[in-house]
Amino acid sequence: MKFTKSLLYFLSILFLASCNKDDQKIDFTFLQLNDVYEIAPIQGGEYGGMARVETVHQELLQENPNTMLFMAGDFLNPSLLGTIKVDGERVRGKQMVEVMNAMNFDLVAFGNHEFDIPLEDLQKRLNESNFPWISANVKLKTKEAAIPFYKEVNGHKEHVGETFVKEFSDADGTKIKVGFISVCIPSNPKEFVEYGNMFVKARSSYAAIKDSVDVVFGLTHVKINNDKRIAKLIPNLPLIMGGHEHTNSYDTVGDVIIAKADANAKTVYVHRISYDKKTKKTIVKSELKEINATIKSDEKVGEIVNKWQTILTAKIKEVIKNPDEVIFEAKTPLDGRDTPIRSTQTNLGVLITKAMSFGYKDEVDCALVNGGSIRIDDQLSGHITAVDIFRVLPYGGEVLKVEIKGRLLKRVLDYGVLAAGNGAYLQRYNAEKVGDTWMIKNQKLDINKTYTVAFSDYLLKGFDIPFLSEENKEVLSIYTPKAEELSFDIRKAVIAYLKSL
Image (cartoon, rainbow, N blue to C red; front, side):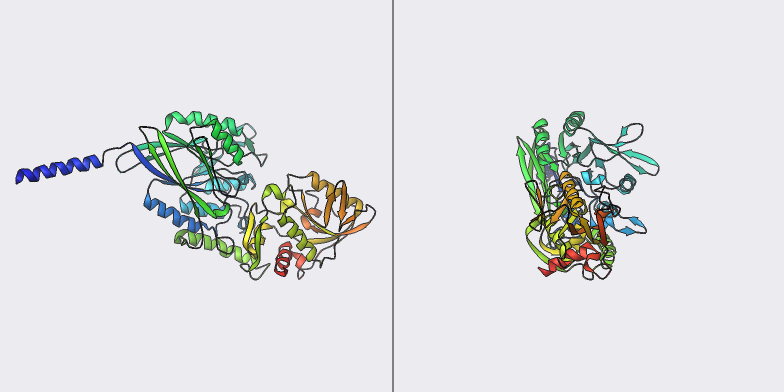
């Protein structure tokens, strides 16, 4: 009997030991976000919300402690919150860093919109962040040389790495090192940024890290065609987590998966990954998860979001009484993405300029707004609220009624066409080019005639179009609206126009 008990005990020890033996296989999870500008839910509360994302994050950590949370670029700008002033200083992404700190992000990549804000503010955001950043191809330009961006913590500079390494271990003792590389699209040239070649830097950073880790992944913010080229150049990447396009996509190039989620956390990607140290094989199973109202908000993150939303609502109520009112149903997405809004006539651009005319009871010949005033860099669909219009036009401003000579109007319109690709490109209403001829209200533009034009006030400051200002002799008169008029704030005009439809 004693012998039997001893044997059973010995066998059970052997069994437990065999269960805990390192099987050289390990599972880990990546939670991917990209292009997130709003911390609160959007589209009338239906989608997105960082507090909801944190609930998903915590569930994944419960499922597997080896879970990492990523942002594939574009989060400091643009946002409506970022444009307001708190204690005399513009927010400029401070709200996002505070939320992301609470969520314990594991790694973030630079996106092109990180460089929208002045260097002084970008440095503050870097210093405030408790998460690591990565980039192989963006550097800080100084008078002496281009150096890595850095965080300043307690007087000590922590430089942003070209690569990043994370170690994982599981219950049976399997240990691996996972490497990451990152590049950013050079689409936002700034004096303080030096962009290295995306493809050269992707390859060199991969070469620098590959022999010191078990497997390497990409965390990028480039166009999908650039990601595909990187996948061809580095065919051993199992997965590239990307951003920039704002709409979800899932592509494969050879054995490389390229995944992008929807902007503003409408969706996130959950990548469940298995790695076998013996075979060096990586298996990636990806799930595109919609972030919607069925997901409960995390309390800790929700408190921070609510704090900032209270500040924002108070600011918006200075202009309009009911910020959360649904004012329009967009069955076709309204296109406010940066590239189209600055290069072609979009349905959102037409809607805004129609609203500018509406603000003056259509008693103008045409309406013009610079594409750079439209800052949402996204498409709006479904329920459109007043807050959404503030997100589209965060800086507001008056709509001016200007009497202008036809000769100058033609110069302005021609300049807007030539400016395609930047913020001076003009979105227009009742001003169309047919061949080489400008048509105003379907009539050929007469350079000797006087026209009445609705302009965004920014355009009359001469920043985008140098010769368009009140000093120009062909600007005959400028009417500035009173505070009680719709045109006093372009956003009031757009909201009123949409409600009229």
